[in-house]
Length: 312
Image (cartoon, rainbow, N blue to C red; front, side, top):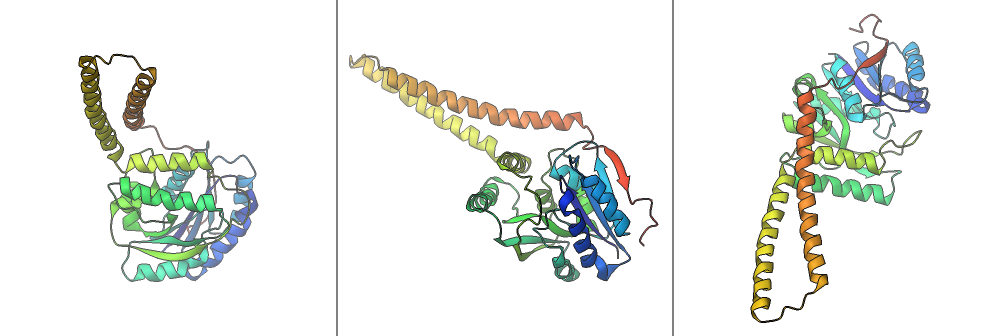
């Protein structure tokens, strides 16, 4: 049985050495049938050079360099597409998700599960705002989503070849990988753990990036925003009818003194609703446009370690 580890890296030069050392140690029980795939997502620092050095130190390390920064989910997909393992471990380069949990995940998968995902019991090194927004995000996402997505999880998971091939068969461009694994089904179980502080560097998921990921998740796995827009439109329709009746009633009673405040309030309210509905429809139309173009997700500008003799 071959075991692979896939790690997207973006400006992670300071942490590549420790990352590969710890991954190599965690994978050692399954050597020599192992591989560590590091995907450089168009980094602007020395990440690619560090991946090359790691490949010189560890025979199992292989690197892919994307031609431009395509985002964490695309970089992760690039690594998953070249992984040859019967089981594949996915984790981030910051080592907040400890690779030392691999033996526990392997043991759980041995009992018949296709996916073992990490559930963050405690999030060390993260501020109150980050923890609160993450907590609310998963609950809000599950309220909107047509597919139940495990709460307090990331991309840290061990998957077998059957589950991985099912996800790789999904061609969409706006990818939310953890949601895709939830959508394909199969037997899945969570493993609770304490998430550690980042070992080096800075987080690449600022508020803007988290917002984009959240919107990808919501629109990629639910049509609920469209239904919300429709309900709001129906509500506003009834409200407008009530407003028209009020206008006619006041006109019939002779109370025709104009009030600019009520007019401005009504116009602002209905305009806001219209803009919201148009924005939601526009987002879904934009996604249809992107999917119809069917451009490649990424291009590879460099490889390292793949010319080595196969580990198995």
